[in-house]
Image 1: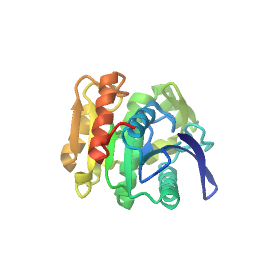
Image 2 (image 1 turned 135 degrees about the horizontal axis):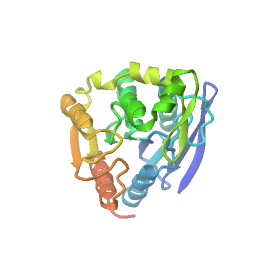
Image 3 (image 1 turned 180 degrees about the vertical axis):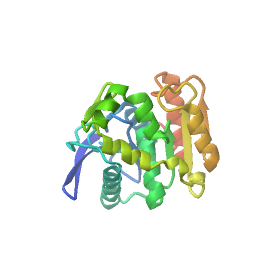
Image 4 (image 1 turned 90 degrees about the vertical axis):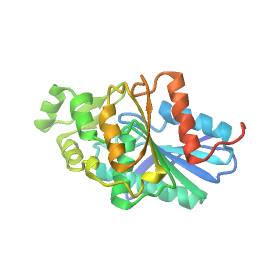
Length: 254
């Protein structure tokens, strides 16, 4: 079943979704990509397969600030961490999972890695699909136009993204630049991390993420010819299968 709920913390209302069967023993917490939402296709694909294979595992997703149904007017990396912390606390208090896993996609991967560097890992294992480890460069060189960057430089807030748009201002860009997670050392967590990345990613450079994984000793799977969104069904199927196997959740069809 699919249920929507909210988590309220420090005046913020975080919109969330859980996909589950009656019994919840383990939880996978998903962080969606830039300008995406808790209902993104990457979350749906994972939830569908998990609920089919693992009747005691739930998949939780939530909207980052200024994304989806969230009503924040501006994005701030620190607020993203606050949202993540609040949702994790809610999951632990409400479901008391034996194991909590993390799955971060693109921008969501960046946010999870940023949180882990600053707070330690709250997850038993964490998997990433095309994580935007160089999020500042991805935003300013790929997602945004030169005109939008100029507008931000003049003090304006612009709407940037893909099919959906989210607000971006100069302060958000500055804070991303100040938090370059490629300089962090994740080797202490590497044994419990997996990165899956397409060789034809047009948004987050394959070579940058591969080098990040190698520098930190993180298990890395290259998917030949796959783009950023893993639009080929066989590529998405492979990614989902690898994530479930990495978490040790393989089971019988429900």
